[in-house]
Length: 495
Image 1 (cartoon, one colour):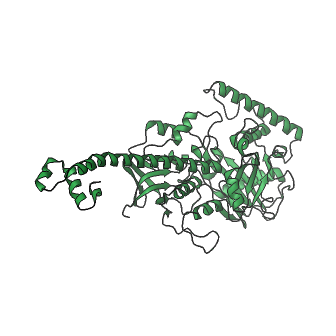
Image 2 (spheres, rainbow, N blue to C red):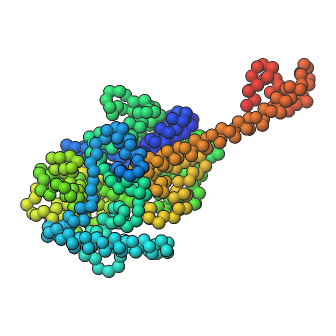
Image 3 (spheres, helix red, strand yellow):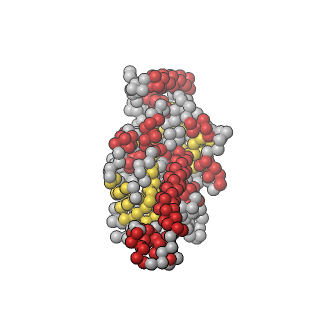
């Protein structure tokens, strides 16, 4: 067991919000920051992996909100690092909807179905706004055709910009760029970390050697009091700090991975439990050659199945990596949890059946598959927070509110930008600034208390000259200590 050493702040989690928070603290003079990360890498839900000869993003993959009057801060970081990206245009996806026999629905039918779905969603939102207790079903009552189910999935499980203005697009712009860089999206975090953590200079993505970052440290217990916080990890280590910034996902907060002593107050635990979690799974399939349409407006295509969300949304990677021969299919929530529980071979068989329905029985088998498992990852337990459009503001306030010396950060604490990388980034800045203000107030309070103790004793020292030791009995013990130590030249001895 390591001997506990006290530092100013412990940051739990080295995702985008945790690294950003630690960076801001360091830039403001708080250099004794310790970062404890449960995994063997930094990045959190930003994670790359080599697959089929290219780098693919298992988690966050897009920089959403580009081209508006305000600049998205994550887009600025990407530009500074010359991160390679590709513009994603979703507008044509609704006209690339395949049925079970491989036919594409006529554009007029697709446009009409899409418009009806948008109008229905808008009406549901109006009902919800006028009556917060109004229950919006995932699929409104009445029979639904496969195309209606597919469009409903696209509207509700992806962005609803056509239904209600989304702050990300309103503030930063409506364009989205897919990260297609061999260094990965996580390169942005490494570049940030290098500004305040010691890193080897062997290569651009040098190894972080700074002892203030500790990997494979699974935090299991937080003991907090008015005097500080004690953090205990799964391997038996103990760390002490004046404050803690907890940048774990909302999914982890909903589990028992981390215990709190004393327990968090009820208002806090209720807020955490009332936040929905979105599970978003991108399944990657590698093929010996292309058999799908490419070219303008063909990057995204949709499969209309009688089961909602069953291998519905597809994308080819030719725009990002020409010649890669990789398809990606996105599943969410229930379907995500279902495929996480089965073998990759079963998932490949299901995906191939859908592809053969769309493109014919003579297409080649996939040669490889990659299935991320965010739900079953105990350090994530989901992909991102999923607040309703008309969110209860008190809910978000309670989720991000500090409890004593424990501060909370992450995309789930951002009311405007929850679910986005820039939401995590901006929350890290906001949380660290709030903590810096708290530290300033605490220092001022300490200074006032010291002055309160010192002033009367200094007054005594100025008005009395003790030449005989027998006069000391006239004063209290602290006064005696002060008067005696001041003669020795260190009046601070009593502090």
